Image (cartoon, rainbow, N blue to C red; front, side):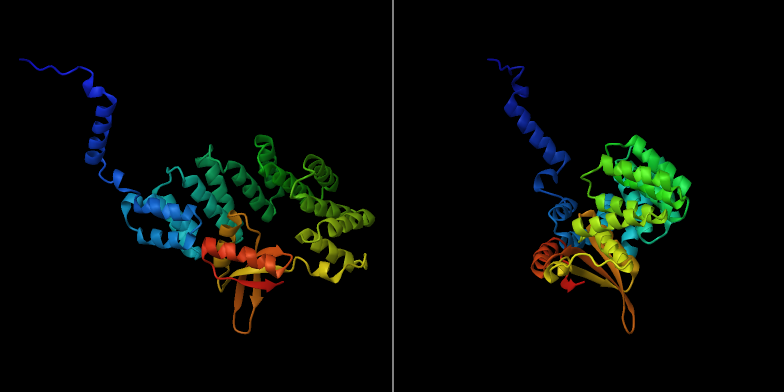
Length: 349
C-alpha cells in the first residue's frame, strides 16, 4: 500500500490561506491583534479628536518604533509654539529623508514667516526647493519665498519667484496669489503702469476668484497713487457695496469716510452684520497665538490674532470667523469645540 500526495494540493486556495495565517502569526505577531498605539492616535487625529490625539502621542514620546510619526503629529497638535517648533526641528534633524520631511520643513518656514522672521523663513523655503524639488509644497514654497523677499524690500527677487511660480504652476491655486504678488512687486518699484496692467490681467483671468476684493483694492490703491481719485472712489464704493464684510470692504469704507464720503444710508441692522467672532485663545506669548492661528487656518478657518493691552499685561487673542449673528457664531463654535476641544467665547468685534 502506498500513499501519494497530489502535487498541487499544497497550493490549493485553502492551503494558501492556512500558510499565510501561520506565517503572519510567526513573523508578525501583532498584525492580527488590531491597530498599533500610533495607528489609534492617528485615527483620533483624522476624526478631528485633536485633544485626545495629542494626549496619546505624548504618551508615545521616546518609543523609537513610532518616533517619526509621533514627532510629526506632535508638531501639528502642540498649541505651545516653542514645543511645536522643537518637535519639528527634532524630526528634521533625525529624519530629513522621511516622506513627510518636506511638509515639516514647510511648516517650520510658515512658523518663521508668521513671526516676521522673513530672512529665516526665506532660507527655509529655499532649502525646501533645493532638497525636495519634487515636493507637493513647491508651489506654496515659491509663493511664500517671494512674499518673504517682498517683506524685506527685495522686490526684484520677489518678482522673480512670483513669475517662476506663474510660469511653472499655472494650474495651481497659488498662481492667482502670485499674480497679485507681481502687482505688489511693481507697486513697490512705483512701476504703476505695469502694476495696473498686471492687476487688470488678474481681474480678467480670475473673475470669480475669492481674491477679487483684494485685487479691486489694489487697483484702487494704484489709481490713488497716480492721482486718479475718481477712479479710486468708484472702486472703493464697489467694495463697500458688494463686499461689505471683507477686510478690503471695511478699509474702503474707512478711506471713503476720510474723503468726506457719505454714501447711502444703510439699515442699522445691516451695519451691525459681520461683527461676531469666536475667541478660542488668549496668550501672553504672541508666538503661541500665531501657532494656533496657523493650525486653524490650515483647517480652513478664517483666523486673526488681536493684540489687547490690559492694565498689567498684553494678551494676544485668537479670533475665528466674522459672523452675521451671535447664533451663527455659537453654532460654529460648538463644532470647533468638538473638533479641537478648545474653550471659547463669543465676542462682538
